[in-house]
Image (cartoon, rainbow, N blue to C red; front, side, top):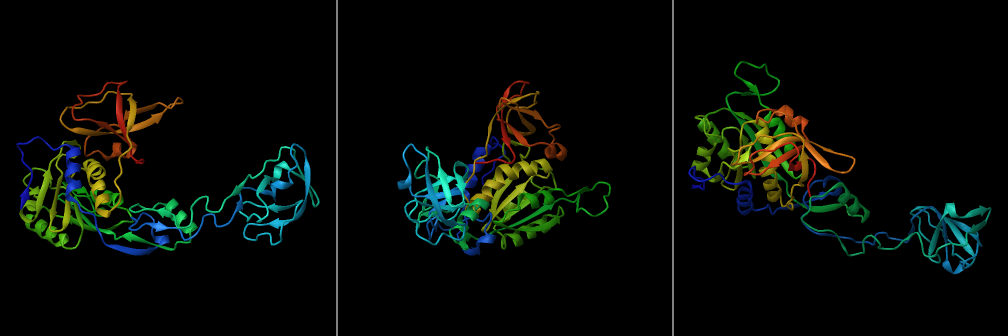
Length: 413
């Protein structure tokens, strides 16, 4: 049993918490083959090399006429005879002779004897005679063999979380399957006697469990195999049994609620008795009562019970940890300065993530305003916001017109 926490010590900063997680987590090593069509969002386990040149043939970059630059009459107009057509997918089959050209379409193979393509708008066609302008340029508008990717070159290096564009690149090389990291097995559940699942009548003293629904959305990632274990009452033995059972099946467990200091908050105590506590409580608002540890080979994240705190701690702490565990490269949140158009209250001591609404004026300047009430139980302002206003630990508040750091929800690098 290891407990790295001490209530007499200052709260752990978010950067120190992330450093501890980074040092504690070992990425999964197991890999599997998957069809390319199923690889979106998976983490590439091996580099992929191109078996072909891309493009495979010289082809036209636009609709026009292919010809040999030797036929250009310098500084003068000239005419060539139309010898045929090269369609995309149906190349011109003949041999281009001096004084001849070929009608060609975008993506069509350029005849071996041609080295130039002129846009169709720049010529005049009269039957089989094509009139070229005096300023015709040579060796233009042809895509070279291997211009995009050379045969044998690395298409994509590991580890990378494959995007739709990555799949397109792999498909362009004829790759139909790739080696990826296995999916993380993740379980999540809520704790608390006050929680009931949606779909049931609401009783006095009860609240609907929004946290599990949010976590299900936050964990919607092709690299994860996720199981919702429901709501577990505030029963210490039942919670401990659930933790131990889940730890033998899953790579990570995420709970919400029960991580604070109330009499029915058992998460830290249970984690100490059956596993290891790496840290508990961090200098973040909302979300101070956050526990991270391990039960056997399973990593454990005990999130607060308030819904906004769940979102903030998941995005700032859990998401980077799961990304590391899955073998994906780390991402830094995109942050930049904006002018705050309202006053913001804050006490020093914790890094705060206030909900904001971002805008940009016609000059490209960014502005942000509070999305409303900032209580950790108020989801409505979280729903209306599109960024965090990140206020450092030492900040004592913000006046209208001050510059602040913002973190858009949907952007990362």
